[in-house]
Amino acid sequence: AAGGLPMGHLPRWPDVPHDFRDKRLNLGIVSLCAYPEGHVLPRYAISNHELYAKRHGYRYHVGREIVDKSRPPAWGKVKLMYQALEEPDVDWWLWFDCDTFFMNMTVTLDSLLYKYGASKASGEMYASHGAGAVNLDPKFHMLVAEDHAMLNTGAFFLRSSSWSLDMLRQVWGSDDSTWVKHPWWENAAILWNFLKDNSEKFRNEDQLALFPDDLGASGEAQDDMEGIYPQEVRLPPPGEVN
Image (cartoon, rainbow, N blue to C red; front, side, top):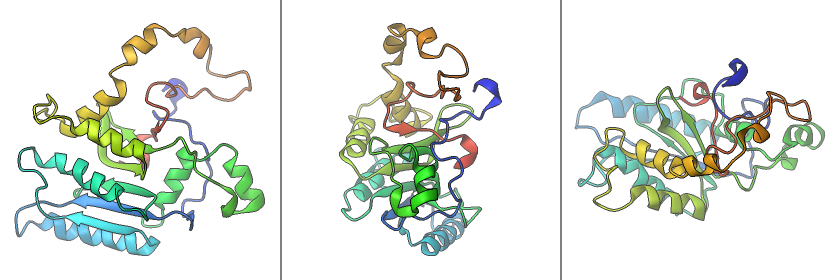
């Protein structure tokens, strides 16, 4: 990004406490560890995930079997997340690949959601009125990072909402979808779903009017990720989640 900033949206609440917990939010973690019997990875991963979830009071679901044998195993995350989103008492779910580990057990999922998806002025409201005064932006439904190549869906958040369900249905697509056997599987399908119309959109936009320089009229840094992905999607820098 311009000015040497990490690629991703600018944080909405930059100094949110790393262990911030919104007791009003019910959060959950979903994973798929469909490895052959005796493989060591599920044992280590599930232990790590369970310890983290228990520490913070998060729900944890893990699948141990291939979800749909007509597709590569990675596509199982789409169906498992869809099933999780249908649970009525969880507000947000984190998808977490089986080969992904929580390295800092003190950083909460809540803090990441609020850092990049808080309603504006949440930091000031928290300082003056406490945790009960801050809220997530109601238009915010997904948090996912890019890596050096594209979106990285090894770890991503979805709000339990009709937007999230509709997005997953579109990503799954038909049985003859060109993305089913793509080398990047569901990563490519999600990216295409979000960015496929951008060429036409950018053709009709005045880019100089949108971003005349690095600073806006208020003197604040411009967020150069705005307008690239749907407004429901926010991207933290890769180091936050990957």
